[in-house]
Length: 117
Image (cartoon, rainbow, N blue to C red; front, top):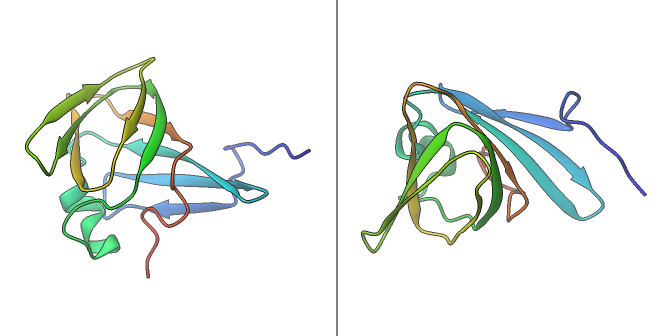
């Protein structure tokens, strides 16, 4: 059994401005808590770190606060907010909606998300 707390994450990955990802690893599973500040957009704040045209990570998450809009490569868009549980396949962009920070937990393929290569 393992217990960890996001108040003391194993790692913190700052975005290129506008937020960060706190990361804990439990066994072979990585869980992230993303804090996305107003004005955050993946293509501005994580793309320079990832080095890919779109986010290539699959997400399985839960929104604690705030709102985010996700733009899929095929042109579809979805918005998530507090209490929403979601899956997002690879090949997307995303942005914070409104003037509140968006905080999410991510149980998906978070291992290399926003990690400098």
